[in-house]
Image 1 (cartoon, one colour):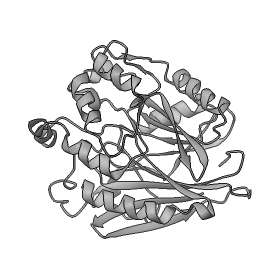
Image 2 (tube, rainbow, N blue to C red):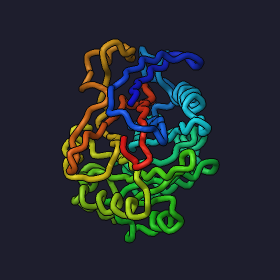
Image 3 (cartoon, rainbow, N blue to C red):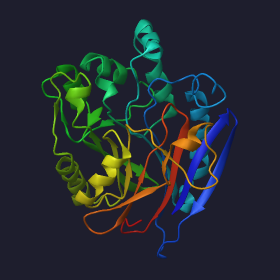
Length: 316
């Protein structure tokens, strides 16, 4: 497994540090580059006052494009998946500009053209109620990637149930990478009714059971490589969740914007004091396997990159 964190400072340059982790040698069937982000929260221009040379969705998009180009080579069984772990917009002056503009929102336009494979639903997507979330999703026209959450029921909200019926909102999805199926399962914090405005959206608090149901269905359908993208409010929640799960290969956390870094990694100024732990974190699942858990600082300050080799049976 090759692990990376990426810091971007200018539109055309990125600094990369590579770390190798020794694994049991097995024949590689697929090398998957997982690119990930979380908690973009409408910070589309830059990383904020005093950090104008960092972050922003334009720099983020350029780094993603470069990494996608570098990681895609199906002749060598190398492919790329890009996911977001939620909070894809946030109430505030930046999103107010989108509300004044109308559909499609600026956040929808930016994320649409970056060409994600799947988005988790975070709590902030519901801050303005179901109608604005539906407007946000309907603003995508180029890339109709699904929004995934295994523990939400939208039956009582017709504007969102319509998106379920059209498979824009799903419990899990499958993407094909170099001819191999890769499953993606989503989950949303059970705290949603208390911290946002989901109205009639019903939240299943039994998160692990909801995820496992989707994972089991994917495995039964022949999918042996599975990524969990969750917005449970912190990476610590994912670390506590993994021991309850089977057959999840990689977990991408959202909601905490934790900075994960290893010695020598380049960081946005000030983030040196915010390091939560190494990249990746690891947890032991119900079958005794070590599962990488990753996340990034939010506001488009970082692109997360984890490169994992899978054998033909889907083992990392």
